[in-house]
Amino acid sequence: MRIGILGTGSMAEALGGQWARAGHEILVGGRSAARAEALAGRIGARAGTLREAARFGDAALLALPYDAVLGVLADAGPLPDDRVLIDCTNAIGPGLALTTGEGPGAARLIAAATGARVVKAFNHVTPAVWARTPPVFADGPLTVPLCGDDEQALALVATLVKDMGCAPLVTGPLHRADLLESATAFLIGLWHAGQDPRTLLPPPAALGG
Ligand SMILES: NC(=O)c1ccc[n+]([C@@H]2O[C@H](COP(=O)([O-])OP(=O)(O)OC[C@H]3O[C@@H](n4cnc5c(N)ncnc54)[C@H](OP(=O)(O)O)[C@@H]3O)[C@@H](O)[C@H]2O)c1
Image 1 (tube, rainbow, N blue to C red):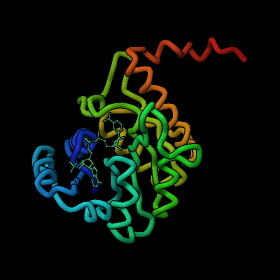
Image 2: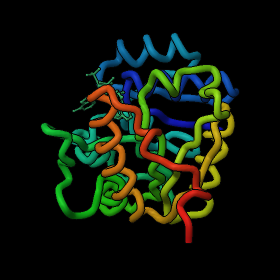
Image 3: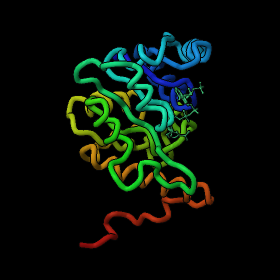
Image 4: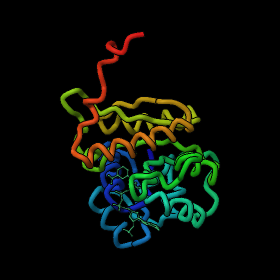
């Protein structure tokens, strides 16, 4: 596949590196041409502008702060028809509150602003996990929840998940991304407090009817 990556930071490097190693053609776009060139060199990709990355190939990863995404995409101009955007953002502010407030979450706001086929993915853990080769632990490959409204777009992102050694799990339509975004803020709070969220979860069979 051909994947555009908007951003030159940690998530861009971790995910772009995995996909480049898997043989995908990556174009990295950044607001700093020097940082885009440097990242492209590290992961074996091409460098370009944010506008080029937004329009490149089969899909584009939004590896930017949520607060920057809508402005960057507006500056990029009209996207190709049926554009697939992969939203890994966490719109989290002080006190781990969602900056998107009580209404639709980041993924739905991006979809509404662009008309693109948005898939929420990769937001629930850190770049250090995504950079592992592969992200496999004692219990097996890491499961990656995917939320989206378009079957083709979900299938495309599921392929990218499998190509990095993880297990995709379609968890519902894009409105479910609101819950994933809130759950991630909740998880981050536990991890920051030194807690292990896995201890909250009994085996499914123990839940009863
Ligand atoms: N880090 C995590 O643990 C983690 C985990 C899951 C999801 N995420 C989400 O993934 C996204 C990227 O996070 P990250 O950790 O990769 O961040 P990062 O390392 O700080 O990189 C952010 C990137 O966004 C660019 N950027 C910032 N403001 C911009 C603007 N106004 N216009 C254009 N580009 C701008 C930065 O460019 P410059 O280098 O020029 O500043 C940089 O390339 C965020 O939405 C974050 O919430 C992060």
